[in-house]
Image (cartoon, rainbow, N blue to C red):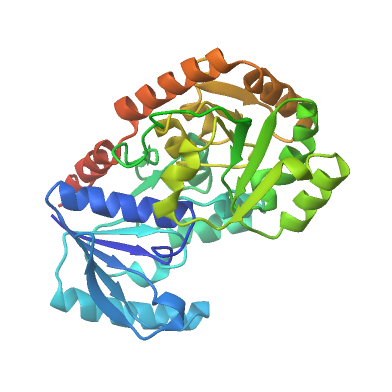
Length: 358
């Protein structure tokens, strides 16, 4: 098949949507498909065309403001399709949706975003607007059952399917040796409110007196608040902030940890969680979105209520104090990713849906 993937988020950006698009595109190429990715220029540079990891990446220079972006994207897209006829268009994220109307090509949409969940809370008027934006879409995919249901709520009556995020199980592998060191607990997230990072900062006070090291991989608006909480509860000296870490370097970050934490208020099938599991780490996560899809309670990790620092602290102490349990859960986590979440499996499931429309 010839596939056009449209996404504002793509490499070298960091974040879940960008990672999803990159890995899905690579896996589709591996399965023998021709994949064009339509995204934005890097750091406001001139538009470009390149072949990267088997994908043909188009970076048209477009206005950022929505009305102008939509108009110019639609014009550019029609020109692109004359030069590169495709069988299917797959849109990731809301922003490019309007530009894909009236093209006489099947358009699928992956509904990734927590922003969508916040939007539907505004009521019937917003529901009607969203339904209108999705009217031309033939099939919606979503990386959590919560997002699937949120898509149906607005009145979208065509097929909606849960397809989880995936992980490259050949890149993300467990450490061959775990040296003697403090128990290292990893929070690999953007430091923003929806990711529950301040709740986590409060929860780690329960670890006082234990030989632990806290590692933060990511930046964001809540960093100063997180640091302030850690200073007040005495855990700042045990904390290391790595800032933004490239995807290329993340396998080594996971392999340097013993536990990975997902304290989110809203989350799809967390790519961070999957990568952690593939590297043999047990997870502690909240019962929201797609996280319970990853964590088999008591087997691959522990689940806690969102926004509850006491419950999170108790789970942290339980795993930090039990090396044999961490090892057992980590082995089961790795096995689960191999059996259910490899990107080739996810790409094949996605391609099967594409074939319904061509």
